[in-house]
Length: 318
Image 1 (cartoon, rainbow, N blue to C red):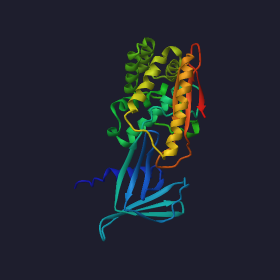
Image 2: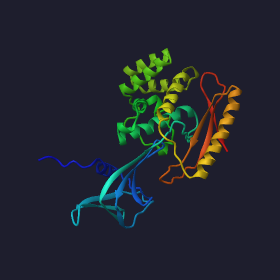
Image 3: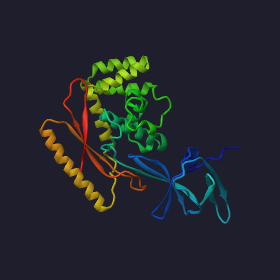
Image 4: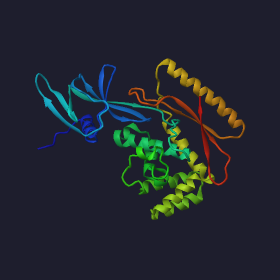
């Protein structure tokens, strides 16, 4: 007797509930359940022709108990019962579909942790594209993204050495200190592309010996001025790999405000570059479908004149 194959959307529903996630959104006449939300993607499970009874607690953070059943009268439909502590919410729906919106995240910047910000931005973007690949699949990632996502398993550049978020918000991915051969091979390929022979040698040694002191040594090398061609190459590949995706759009006044801030940032960037200072522009923006606490911010990452190591300062464009 063959097993019943559930549609992918229902498998993802089970996955989300098992993780204790149950964030509902009521927008555009639809009832959505958040599946994956980050700067690269806004993904939802949509309850088709749904109605809800009971009490939904938006701020609930405890354990969930959920049960999905099928009814056949008057026609096939589904009933999802979710217990949020002592309260119960029930959703009646006819079908479950996926809704996915992909966005350009190449110039997104979050400066939550000070020091080596240029490496933390790379770590953050590699982490979110890896989540996109793991949760949504390869069909939602281009070739460049699939290649760079492997670097989430490269400790000298992942959250173990250059976390982009404060420690209390970190979500470890397995043994973060253990590299994979695929990740090291990608880094060797990139180091060869910029002819960084000393880093290639260190990476070949790292492929044989995964000691933590070797990880930290390579992490320090990525901070040094003489290895910044490799860092720039990775950063540029992230930007080029995402430029085919659309930017987020909001209402006209908000879009115009962001455009004005970006124009001001570009003028400041041009002035600083004339003075010989390398400058990059980053923006921070909220989600389009789900309201979050983020607001629009535009930043300049300005290289400081330095010696052995690279240092930058971050200035917000008001």
